[in-house]
Length: 157
Picture (cartoon, rainbow, N blue to C red):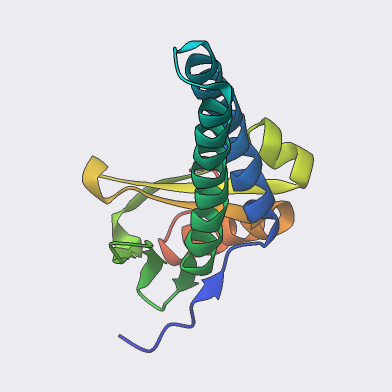
């Protein structure tokens, strides 16, 4: 196998992941603050704990998203699709083209708003299915075509 050049996902995916994290973290932070404020502890302590929780959950999550983005890479080799990801546990996945059965391009609401798409490669084994998030819309469609060509299938798959 020849050396595969790994490319980063589109930088706009950071925005998507940040928004998705905030949609989770802000309501949880508000709920924790509400519980702390109604507990029988001094208000100053409840507010200090709430602020600390907010900094830890929201700030920590946004920091993790930046790390997650930094470690996401993909590349097309001559024989395999290579995916590299992971912050704490690094993962290197190689999917041979001959195993590719289907390539889907999808976009959720935040992805559509940002002009991004997600590419999902299905194989005979569910354990080896692969997904590349945060691709530019046109790049995702082009990548789908290239993977199907290398898999020996046409775009009708």
